[in-house]
Length: 101
Ligand code: FES
Image (cartoon, rainbow, N blue to C red; front, side, top):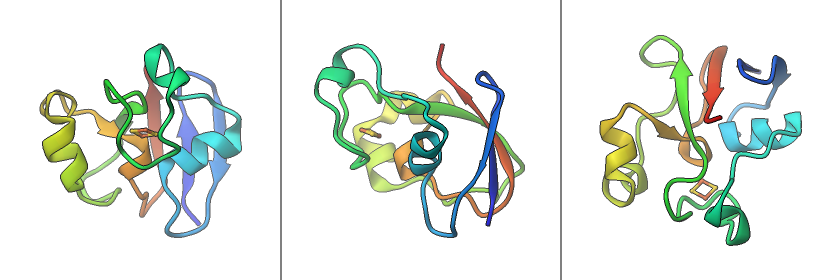
């Protein structure tokens, strides 16, 4: 079970294999969707306006699943800025996540 540490919130949780970082945030009680997206959350499907569940990763290459088509095509700007969507990332090893302030 990978350990996910949320740097800004100083919280670490373990999640079962196959769960996403969005699931980890929910388990830790961290709300990732803010602003307009909070009013229309997609519940982890990758469709929030503005990439509301975007995060930075502090992890070595291969620590998370590769970017999905939703990240590459629907959220191109985030992807180009080296952010990921928490709901589309499945951790494979222990890692640290930086949420957006
Ligand atoms: S939860 Fe909506 S894009 Fe990730």
